[in-house]
Amino acid sequence: MIAYCASTSTQKTLSALRASGWRLLLTPDILKKTKDKRPQLWPTGEPAPYALDNGAFGAYQRGVSFDSDAFRWAVARVGSSADWVAIPDSVGNAVLTYKLAGEWFEYVKKYTRRPLFVVQDDMKSNDVRRWVSRGCGLFVGGSTEFKLKTMGKWSRLAHDYGNICHVGRVNSQKRIILCAHAGADSFDGSSVAQFPSTLPLLNKAVQFTNQQRSLF
Image 1 (cartoon, rainbow, N blue to C red):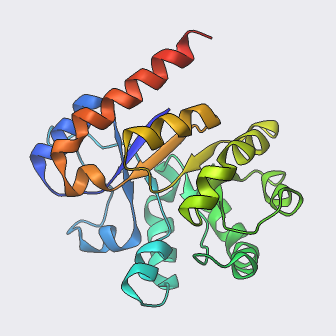
Image 2 (tube, rainbow, N blue to C red):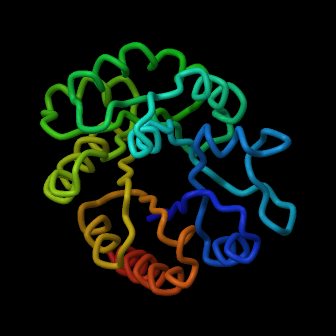
Protein backbone atom coordinates (compact mmCIF):
# COMPACT_ATOMS: atom_id res chain seq x y z
CA MET A 1 0.00 0.00 0.00
CA ILE A 2 1.42 3.38 -1.01
CA ALA A 3 1.50 6.19 1.57
CA TYR A 4 1.15 9.84 0.53
CA CYS A 5 1.88 12.77 2.82
CA ALA A 6 0.45 16.23 2.29
CA SER A 7 3.17 18.40 0.83
CA THR A 8 5.61 20.08 3.19
CA SER A 9 8.57 22.40 2.72
CA THR A 10 10.45 21.18 5.78
CA GLN A 11 13.65 19.60 4.52
CA LYS A 12 14.11 17.29 7.50
CA THR A 13 10.60 15.92 7.09
CA LEU A 14 11.05 15.50 3.35
CA SER A 15 14.26 13.52 3.94
CA ALA A 16 12.47 11.28 6.43
CA LEU A 17 9.57 10.70 4.03
CA ARG A 18 11.95 9.78 1.23
CA ALA A 19 13.83 7.36 3.46
CA SER A 20 10.54 5.72 4.48
CA GLY A 21 9.32 5.32 0.90
CA TRP A 22 6.43 7.75 1.20
CA ARG A 23 5.24 9.98 -1.63
CA LEU A 24 3.80 13.49 -1.72
CA LEU A 25 0.26 14.67 -2.29
CA LEU A 26 0.29 17.97 -4.16
CA THR A 27 -2.55 20.45 -4.61
CA PRO A 28 -2.95 23.47 -6.92
CA ASP A 29 -2.37 25.75 -3.90
CA ILE A 30 0.98 24.12 -3.16
CA LEU A 31 2.12 24.35 -6.77
CA LYS A 32 1.19 28.03 -6.97
CA LYS A 33 3.51 28.72 -4.04
CA THR A 34 6.58 27.11 -5.60
CA LYS A 35 8.88 29.53 -7.37
CA ASP A 36 9.50 27.31 -10.38
CA LYS A 37 5.93 25.95 -10.47
CA ARG A 38 6.96 22.33 -10.84
CA PRO A 39 6.62 19.17 -8.75
CA GLN A 40 8.67 19.11 -5.58
CA LEU A 41 12.18 17.72 -5.29
CA TRP A 42 13.57 15.71 -2.42
CA PRO A 43 16.40 17.45 -0.54
CA THR A 44 18.78 15.25 -2.58
CA GLY A 45 17.61 16.99 -5.75
CA GLU A 46 15.67 13.99 -7.07
CA PRO A 47 12.07 14.47 -8.21
CA ALA A 48 9.68 13.33 -5.48
CA PRO A 49 6.98 10.92 -6.72
CA TYR A 50 3.56 12.45 -6.22
CA ALA A 51 -0.15 12.46 -6.86
CA LEU A 52 -2.29 15.53 -7.56
CA ASP A 53 -5.39 16.26 -5.51
CA ASN A 54 -7.89 18.79 -6.83
CA GLY A 55 -7.88 21.16 -3.85
CA ALA A 56 -11.62 20.95 -3.23
CA PHE A 57 -11.28 19.73 0.37
CA GLY A 58 -8.85 22.51 1.26
CA ALA A 59 -11.21 25.10 -0.22
CA TYR A 60 -14.07 23.56 1.76
CA GLN A 61 -12.07 23.80 4.98
CA ARG A 62 -11.25 27.45 4.33
CA GLY A 63 -14.83 28.28 3.40
CA VAL A 64 -13.92 29.47 -0.11
CA SER A 65 -15.01 28.41 -3.59
CA PHE A 66 -13.15 25.73 -5.52
CA ASP A 67 -10.54 27.40 -7.74
CA SER A 68 -11.17 25.80 -11.13
CA ASP A 69 -8.54 27.95 -12.86
CA ALA A 70 -5.83 26.85 -10.41
CA PHE A 71 -6.79 23.21 -10.89
CA ARG A 72 -6.74 23.51 -14.68
CA TRP A 73 -3.32 25.18 -14.48
CA ALA A 74 -1.94 22.47 -12.17
CA VAL A 75 -3.20 19.54 -14.25
CA ALA A 76 -1.72 20.97 -17.44
CA ARG A 77 1.68 21.42 -15.79
CA VAL A 78 2.16 18.34 -13.64
CA GLY A 79 -0.68 15.93 -14.40
CA SER A 80 1.27 13.82 -16.86
CA SER A 81 3.86 12.78 -14.28
CA ALA A 82 1.45 12.30 -11.39
CA ASP A 83 0.60 8.83 -10.10
CA TRP A 84 -3.02 9.94 -10.37
CA VAL A 85 -5.16 13.08 -10.48
CA ALA A 86 -8.37 13.52 -8.48
CA ILE A 87 -11.26 14.79 -10.59
CA PRO A 88 -12.97 17.84 -8.99
CA ASP A 89 -15.67 17.00 -6.46
CA SER A 90 -17.97 18.72 -3.99
CA VAL A 91 -17.37 17.69 -0.38
CA GLY A 92 -20.43 15.88 0.99
CA ASN A 93 -22.51 16.50 -2.13
CA ALA A 94 -23.04 13.44 -4.31
CA VAL A 95 -25.23 15.15 -6.91
CA LEU A 96 -22.81 18.01 -7.54
CA THR A 97 -19.83 15.64 -7.58
CA TYR A 98 -21.44 13.65 -10.42
CA LYS A 99 -22.00 16.92 -12.27
CA LEU A 100 -18.42 18.07 -11.79
CA ALA A 101 -17.07 14.70 -12.92
CA GLY A 102 -19.07 15.04 -16.13
CA GLU A 103 -17.62 18.50 -16.72
CA TRP A 104 -14.00 17.67 -15.91
CA PHE A 105 -13.43 14.05 -16.91
CA GLU A 106 -12.32 14.65 -20.50
CA TYR A 107 -9.98 17.48 -19.52
CA VAL A 108 -8.28 15.48 -16.77
CA LYS A 109 -8.09 12.40 -19.00
CA LYS A 110 -6.03 14.38 -21.55
CA TYR A 111 -3.25 14.96 -19.06
CA THR A 112 -3.09 11.90 -16.84
CA ARG A 113 -3.05 8.16 -17.29
CA ARG A 114 -5.03 7.66 -14.09
CA PRO A 115 -7.93 9.97 -13.17
CA LEU A 116 -9.68 9.24 -9.86
CA PHE A 117 -13.39 9.76 -9.27
CA VAL A 118 -14.06 11.00 -5.72
CA VAL A 119 -16.71 8.97 -3.90
CA GLN A 120 -19.04 10.87 -1.53
CA ASP A 121 -21.70 9.93 1.02
CA ASP A 122 -24.93 8.47 -0.41
CA MET A 123 -23.34 7.30 -3.66
CA LYS A 124 -24.42 3.91 -4.96
CA SER A 125 -22.25 1.29 -6.63
CA ASN A 126 -24.27 1.24 -9.85
CA ASP A 127 -23.82 4.99 -10.30
CA VAL A 128 -20.10 4.97 -9.47
CA ARG A 129 -19.55 2.00 -11.80
CA ARG A 130 -20.18 4.34 -14.74
CA TRP A 131 -16.93 6.14 -13.92
CA VAL A 132 -14.90 3.07 -13.09
CA SER A 133 -15.89 1.50 -16.39
CA ARG A 134 -14.53 4.59 -18.17
CA GLY A 135 -11.09 4.07 -16.68
CA CYS A 136 -11.32 5.98 -13.41
CA GLY A 137 -9.85 4.77 -10.18
CA LEU A 138 -11.68 5.68 -6.98
CA PHE A 139 -10.75 8.19 -4.30
CA VAL A 140 -12.78 7.47 -1.16
CA GLY A 141 -13.79 10.82 0.29
CA GLY A 142 -16.91 11.74 2.22
CA SER A 143 -17.48 11.62 5.96
CA THR A 144 -15.35 9.47 8.24
CA GLU A 145 -18.27 7.16 9.04
CA PHE A 146 -19.07 6.65 5.36
CA LYS A 147 -15.42 6.11 4.47
CA LEU A 148 -14.80 3.44 7.09
CA LYS A 149 -18.07 1.65 6.39
CA THR A 150 -17.78 1.48 2.60
CA MET A 151 -14.13 1.57 1.52
CA GLY A 152 -13.97 -2.18 1.12
CA LYS A 153 -16.84 -2.03 -1.34
CA TRP A 154 -15.16 0.71 -3.37
CA SER A 155 -11.86 -1.17 -3.43
CA ARG A 156 -13.57 -4.25 -4.83
CA LEU A 157 -15.43 -2.20 -7.44
CA ALA A 158 -12.25 -0.46 -8.61
CA HIS A 159 -10.31 -3.73 -8.77
CA ASP A 160 -13.09 -5.43 -10.75
CA TYR A 161 -12.24 -3.03 -13.57
CA GLY A 162 -8.46 -3.09 -13.12
CA ASN A 163 -8.34 0.30 -11.41
CA ILE A 164 -7.00 1.50 -8.07
CA CYS A 165 -8.67 2.65 -4.87
CA HIS A 166 -7.23 5.47 -2.74
CA VAL A 167 -8.49 6.59 0.69
CA GLY A 168 -8.20 10.19 1.84
CA ARG A 169 -7.62 11.62 5.33
CA VAL A 170 -5.85 8.69 6.98
CA ASN A 171 -3.85 9.84 9.99
CA SER A 172 -3.62 6.96 12.45
CA GLN A 173 -2.19 3.46 12.67
CA LYS A 174 -5.65 2.02 13.12
CA ARG A 175 -6.99 3.65 9.99
CA ILE A 176 -3.96 2.59 7.93
CA ILE A 177 -4.59 -1.02 8.93
CA LEU A 178 -8.30 -0.69 8.16
CA CYS A 179 -7.44 0.64 4.70
CA ALA A 180 -5.19 -2.33 4.08
CA HIS A 181 -7.86 -4.79 5.21
CA ALA A 182 -10.32 -3.05 2.88
CA GLY A 183 -7.96 -3.66 -0.04
CA ALA A 184 -7.02 -0.03 -0.66
CA ASP A 185 -3.99 0.57 -2.86
CA SER A 186 -2.96 3.84 -1.23
CA PHE A 187 -3.91 6.50 1.30
CA ASP A 188 -3.00 10.06 2.18
CA GLY A 189 -2.82 12.09 5.34
CA SER A 190 -1.54 15.39 6.70
CA SER A 191 -0.37 14.16 10.11
CA VAL A 192 3.31 13.83 9.22
CA ALA A 193 3.40 17.26 7.55
CA GLN A 194 1.94 18.83 10.69
CA PHE A 195 3.58 16.59 13.27
CA PRO A 196 6.75 14.99 11.82
CA SER A 197 7.29 12.92 14.97
CA THR A 198 4.31 10.74 13.96
CA LEU A 199 6.10 9.32 10.90
CA PRO A 200 7.85 6.37 12.64
CA LEU A 201 4.60 5.27 14.24
CA LEU A 202 2.54 5.53 11.05
CA ASN A 203 5.26 3.97 8.94
CA LYS A 204 5.28 0.91 11.21
CA ALA A 205 1.62 0.38 10.29
CA VAL A 206 2.43 0.72 6.58
CA GLN A 207 5.28 -1.77 6.84
CA PHE A 208 3.16 -4.19 8.84
CA THR A 209 0.29 -4.16 6.33
CA ASN A 210 2.66 -4.55 3.38
CA GLN A 211 4.39 -7.50 5.06
CA GLN A 212 1.01 -9.13 5.72
CA ARG A 213 0.01 -8.74 2.08
CA SER A 214 3.28 -10.28 0.91
CA LEU A 215 2.37 -13.49 2.74
CA PHE A 216 -0.64 -14.16 0.50
